[in-house]
Length: 238
Image (cartoon, rainbow, N blue to C red; front, side, top):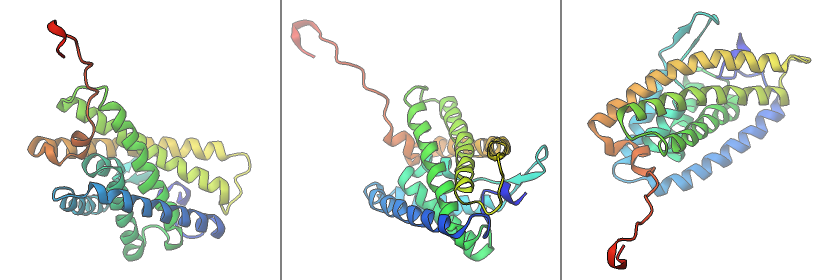
């Protein structure tokens, strides 16, 4: 069951591949810092700290997946993307992963680059791409926001799990032969169930924040619906 864990332990992926992804993760996080500084303001800076703290706290709570014999917890990529944006959101999740690895031993320290790539980068990016698309299509109602948060969170978890499959294909320490497709299917199935739990948590949290302070939801502030085309009126005045 070790290979089903999103928090990759030391020894599951070989050293060279882990080092490559550590370098990629460091480069991507540097880009997030540079780009995220443009978004930081008096609202977003404290919100980022609250989001990181909330993700850290909720990740301590596991919910069982009885059909798979494993348990899951919030990854937080979609939640962070909704509330503080993709750049700062990726940094929030990365900070949580570093603290968990160094203090609680949740995921190997040598595998931090892999775990950050999967959960902080791939998960957050996939979530925000869906959020940006869906909020331009769905109505800006509570139902539309809930559906967006749920779908983005569910898909982001599955995408993150497939990042592990790619990494295992590149440098897994156990030869799976021709069974890589089976690993991909198992990871997708288990993490789809975990994603549903994450989707419910994310939708509930985002709706709660939006109800009290909609101005604190980054996605609602930054993603605007397409403007209607100007219509000529009498006298040639638009």
